[in-house]
Image (cartoon, rainbow, N blue to C red; front, side, top):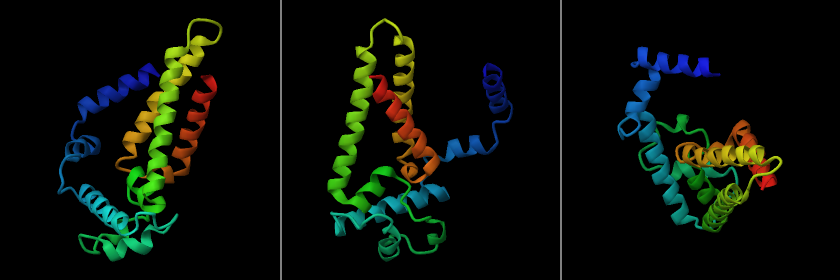
Length: 173
């Protein structure tokens, strides 16, 4: 594992102009095509929530997206049926009450994980429990942060890992 990490570091230093480097530089550029599309999705999502504060229902984003799309319809083929943001997707589909529950649920999960880290003392299995909870806590934060630019709750392989790690961490507490 250490060798693979070292190769990755060397590769990124030797070949800085590859896609990753260019994409890293483009993250803050509002004119970059995928950034522009995400900004459009956020604006459109806000408009949908304004018109439907109780939500439009699961898997109904497309039915409302084209009508309210703020920057024209030329990029619709790239829309993919979701808003590339966990919080926005939940607000649009489940409404503001659903968003409040979603935020509360994430808060409870993080609080439980953090509390579990602080509560575990030495003893049999403490090191493993601490590692599981710490890893899950970090994964939860990473999942939330990445979910600000991608609807990762809509991707089965990601959300399955998320639920599994969340369950492990709560069980370890």
